[in-house]
Amino acid sequence: MQKQVLLIHGGGGEEDFKADALLADSLRKNLGESFTVHYPFLEDDESSPDFGRINQIHEALSSLTGEIILVDILWVLL
Image 1 (cartoon, rainbow, N blue to C red):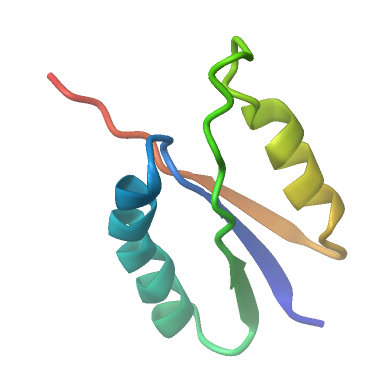
Image 2 (cartoon, rainbow, N blue to C red):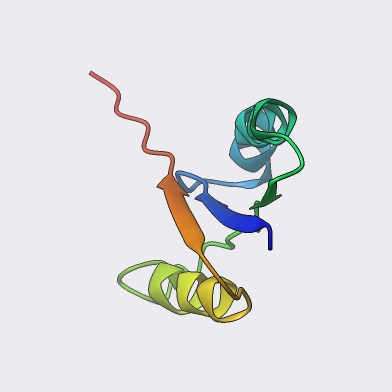
């Protein structure tokens, strides 16, 4: 069974999602066929204190089976 990798992008809009897609593509290429990399777009829900992230991540995790590796992209600007 393939290992499932769930890559969570660091937030922001569609431009940020597309920029982080380079990492998702790199993971797919370098991890090989033993892994399936999932990279869902997380929409900003500005009416929610957490931008709706908790529910969206829960939904993404719930859709996967077997061994799951969670990768979070966090951008820090200094």
